[in-house]
Amino acid sequence: MHELSVCQGLLRQVKQIALEHRATAVEKIYLQIGPLAGVEPALLQAAFPIASADSLAAQAQMVIRAMPIRVHCRRCHADTEASLNNLTCADCGDWETELLSGDELLIERIEMQTPQ
Image (cartoon, rainbow, N blue to C red):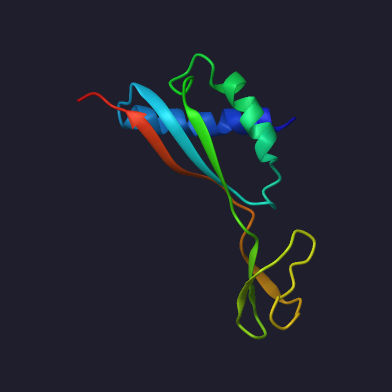
């Protein structure tokens, strides 16, 4: 379960951001995760309480937004959705595509409590 180490890494980033904003607690952490990120969202959610214990984010909620796989076709220039094992253009079927999204694991937003 490498999601625990991924979660610990995310929480290090969240802690740094919280310290920069002098936050007293983290309330919500919004993530964007694509199917090509190599992370299972359910396992990441399960690891979160373990990784966040005794931290500023101990009471925080993790909100995950699943991102679609999107590709740009170099032949017909269409931007289309693709599937996990088929990154071809949905319009013309060409295989010369460029990945636009689907491999991200990003902190989108953090809600924190800060001193008045």
